[in-house]
Length: 338
Image (cartoon, rainbow, N blue to C red; front, side, top):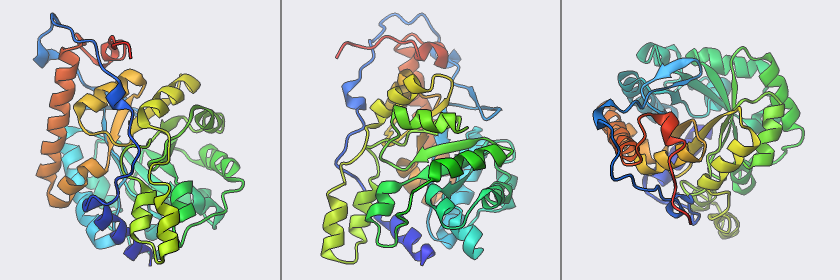
């Protein structure tokens, strides 16, 4: 059943039926154009560090998933492309792999394909109220030789999903326990409704020092669940929340203000390198893409490489036209007054 659900999710997102009504907020932000940048564009440094490794640019393959057979192909394409560009890769939920043994490309071969890039394992927070604990978290990490574990937060999706896990009591304490017992950092990640500043601070205080805001403006899992609802009533309930969530731009700014020392991942509706530049300016350390990358990931590793090379080229132009020689200067680039 889990595998079938993942395949349904993948089809809906690929068909474009998972877009929600929310906006990312990036359209309201504009850089002040620098007409005399005094730079050589080819010398702009887009490299940075993430999870103790130097990476080729401030981009992350955000978690995506599908049934095991499709996931295997997608993960191989992504890992090969990430190795070529030296970019980090976050895998989709490993629940099926842990519970049913349907690995779907989530094994040691993934690390073999991408030996030098940061890999991030992934478990849903709700699973820690259904029998998972630190042992399963360590299993997810060991399964792919991960550098960190994502615990994804998806209360809206669980609330409108017919098979959803709706008992979220005590999860902060359980996340704190996992963060304390794991030998790798824990990442808290929403899936498209955003993480607010106060929530990020609670997670930081619990030992979670990487926050992926995954704000509203990209895939809406309420819209996705409306598409696969079993009754008109279920569809109506889910569809009412297709615009729900904290816009990505606002979530990044809030989390950075609340957790100045956190590693912040800006994701949720990132369309291109200009959005990526805006996310970095607002406080993101790196930027994640998932649905915008999914079609390329189903095709080939070369298609994924081409996609990211385009995003990096756009980001480089944004740096050039703001007079930013590197990402540190981009974070201080002037913005136009709203």
